Length: 389
Image (cartoon, rainbow, N blue to C red; front, top):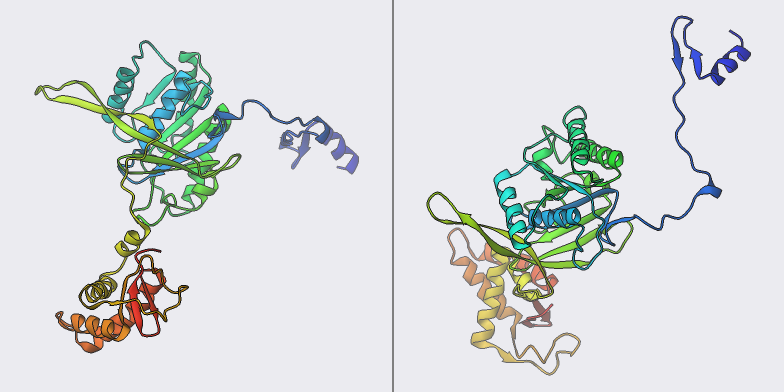
């Protein structure tokens, strides 16, 4: 076949790889020309300047932090079209995948209904079962069909799909591997098909020092908005990533108990609802106390020996210590570095399996650690506790 004949067939959308096997050329991708592109001014937000109307968001925190209560509160405000934390909300259908604890979620929904005196139907649908959103051939299609059916029954446009939790919908995948990318792609498929927001609820690593979501880095990289929930008497939701807005915004909330009724034994059955607040009821822990709390057992022993020595034999702050080295309005007494070293070595040597040599090594390890943490300071032969960072 000559080049002209191939060109004629291409214009008709057909090429022949083999005379008996004609195949159709792939459809071209949609394009927008520069002169035709207009700014998008409306419809960008599901919750104004917090959650985008389309894409992926992530809510995560430690167990007991209130992350599921937070997600459900957002879900019900979207379903009702109510303002959330004084922000405008785009109303629409919410589908909530309650893969963890269907009974608990039903009680939370009942508590919200009682607390806010809601009667009748609202465009909210609960899927009370685990699904697999990780395997490309698993339940993503079933979820899409369920959203489609719920939209038809409610007459509302899909606005938000919440998946609670990621771990219960991850199938046989491993969160710390590239399996996470497939999960994100499946969530994005739902978001794209219904032009809505998909929001998984996820866990924070067991290591309390890490504030990143648990699992592979593709998770945080693949979502538009990330909200960290911190536990406490007053709980805090902080925006740690925002594609088209500001990060660092915080929302405080408490959990208010609502009585639902009594069980078969006559005992009260309760659940909780979110109450937004501007007052933080959590105890404030000083940076100094936090730093001391993070010390290893050996370093804490050396620190305690310094405190005992200052209390028993501390001397007034010498005049020759520069003001740039010590806060005289805070520090009243100091001790000699040698006396602190001897006391710490002796204390370590009294413990089983320790001697003075091991005590010296422990002190030599602890001293730079205490100084780096801002807990203790040394100048020439003097040492003291800073009591501030």
